[in-house]
Amino acid sequence: MTFFEDPKADKKSRISVWLGLGVLTVVLSGLLLIPTGFVIERPGQVFNVMGEISGEQVISSSEAEIFPSETRFDVTTVSLLGNRESTPSWIQVFMAWADPNQIVIPLDEVFPPNFSTEQFRAESSLQMEVSQQDAIAVALKELGFEVPRVLYVNTVLEDAPASGILIAGDLLVNADGQPVFDFDSFKSIIQSVEGEPLEIEVIRQGAATTLFISPELTGETWAIGAMIGYTYDFPFDLTLQLGDVGGPSGGLIFSLGVLDSLTPGSLAGNLHIAGTGTIDSDGNVGPIGGIALKMLGAQVAGATLFLAPEANCEEALANIPSDLTVVSVRDLAEAIDKIDLFNSGQKLPDLQCTN
Image (cartoon, rainbow, N blue to C red; front, side, top):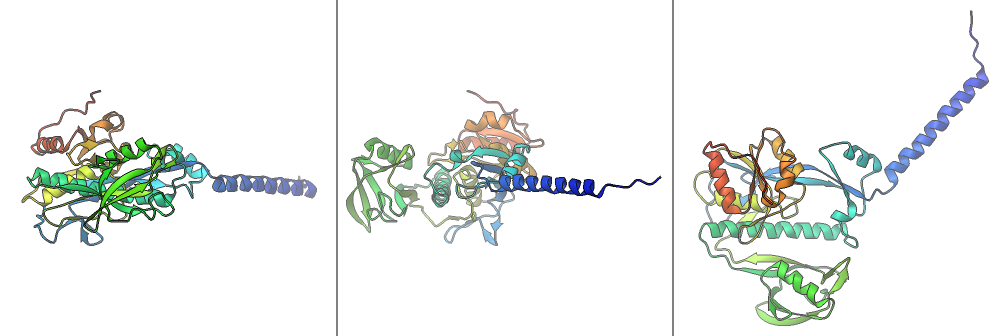
């Protein structure tokens, strides 16, 4: 028996297939091109601050002796896919939602409205610079050095209230008649004047100068359009370099690395330690974002001990990877104590969070 196909039916079938493929192509193209309004966080790179990056030591000095150490201290990072100008595709977002090792975040939670990617990167870079300066200062104070601190103007944004008034390098002394000791106090003073002219006293090229700036509202925050950094009068030159990495979350690990580098021997034997957390000039460890992804990155890199900020304890407790001991710390002193216990072979208690 021979079955004869109807040529017209076959032609109709092919047309239907091509129409279906066309519709599918249009849908997929839409999923690739339509902005999503999200960004995606993934585990980022891990950097050993006791080692080298691109052939250069992360911690170096032209004036002080840098001692070798067998301890490895890893700064953990989060990789961010997308920005205000270019968001991930819907396909990438759907895949990230299905992947427990990726986090989908609304765009506005990372990039505030009216805040460009350039501004975000500038602020992130400044946060890293401030974090490194604080980390060095804390370590030096732990070693008994006196370390005075002052705020300075790092960058002035174009067409901002401070443009043409402040210049890079100005040292901030007073704002609205109040001494300025840290960034938080300066930011609070800016908010308090609510757009009225703000009197600022600076030291410029060694001379005191009084200036007036009227903050502008950016989203829900009053701003003058200047990136403010810290500078310290260190007793000797000390440099930290971590390549193209921004944000303040490496502060704790930087402090431990500097402390280890400036003292003979190894702070923790041949342990492989990772961690995260901001650090202020008093040695207090502050909260950060993306701790679950950072712990995962530490585990993949082979760390055995992870230092987490106490403020991130609940999130850390819910996401501890296998074969990684996680402890919470309030400050540098507690971090050193727990490292000493772990290095002595004692089993640290399971992570517990106190409210």
